[in-house]
Length: 202
Image (cartoon, rainbow, N blue to C red; front, top):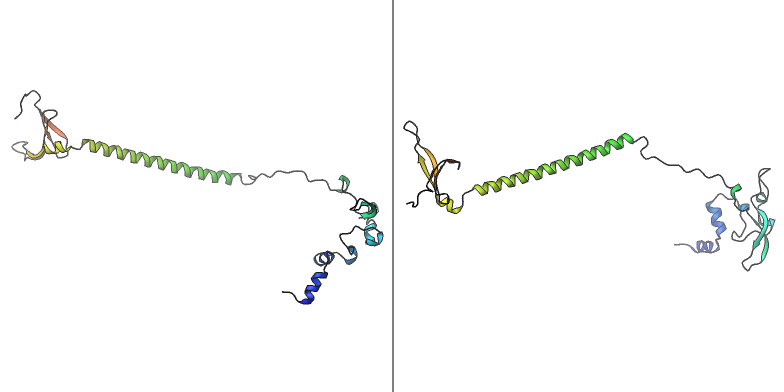
């Protein structure tokens, strides 16, 4: 992937070279070893030890630094950060998500609520329709003649009068009620002969 010269450059590259390549920092603004604290004014750019404005402190100043083994040495460092060196914090603010969108929000949720209300109404109507249909079917099945009733039902031609032709009818021999029932073709009872007083029916 890399040539011999490129590999040699990578091995000799320092972190200072990377900072110089990716930033606009000038060569004199960084010490040769960026990880070593400056111990003399010669290690620092002259502009860093002089204030840029009359009442402004320099970027770095001389002070005391503690070495890794506990030894105190002279060094140059940036002044510590305190309240006087920071800008005032921006006060907290709240954001109203409904600002300038109150009516669209109300209309949108109104439409959604109306949609669900219509859906619930249609669902209730469907359930009632199915229930009523089931009730009617059960009532129709309850009125339907049983196998014994079907055996005791006979079609006949009913005589109405001399000037009128006969009409079809159903003669039902109702054993439980001891009746001879005459019904029209729709199954509606038109007349009945009560034989409950008879002890024996031929």
